[in-house]
Image (cartoon, rainbow, N blue to C red; front, side, top):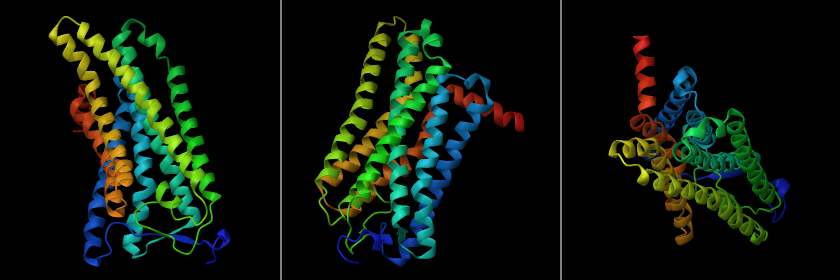
Length: 309
């Protein structure tokens, strides 16, 4: 391939975690298991939310959207990696790589904004309980999800277009199991300064604004909980937020770990390993966190299973 000739780009190579043949079957089994757990766990949350009328509330509406986004998020990268291991191929087409990158960015951003929306929902429920049903109307819930999707889609479209303007050389090997934005940009032969600026500014906006909204909501929630006189009342109020606090902490800690590790070191293996945490582990654990710590979900699950026995 000649330098700067984008029309000659046919595919990228995803090197994954290990080049040792004996490790491929182990990696395949681990990721297949995690993917199936993620899909079935999140699908169960969605089905319970739809089938149980007691779960037809804004909180569980947002949770079902988050579960659907998590299924799509893992499905964007893991099946391709499993196919590559099975066929002993590391290739992904140029169009396929850009498409994968677009949906990874879109779904990660959607997750981010949904967590902020869910924090706002808990803020209204605890701080303004008498006006909850009026404020969190079905129209507002739909608008919040739609706005989250539009912003995430525009961001991922911007980043994808910015990558399409780059010229690539012959070395198109990505030391990763997916087409991660930074990895793809740094393969370019042309100047990536503008791309880097857009990436950093978007990261500040897309991570900073939702995180600020989440922190503000929970600061108000904590103040309201402290004002409750009874210990039982405090525990009940906090228990409604415990699951989401766990998910928020897991999402931000793992995603920040990816970018901090990639900024601190240039080790491709450490970056790929860190990416597993927020692309696979976090979506897999979310259903367990909500089901194990949520009485409504556990009750709906018992009723559903009990009705089928």
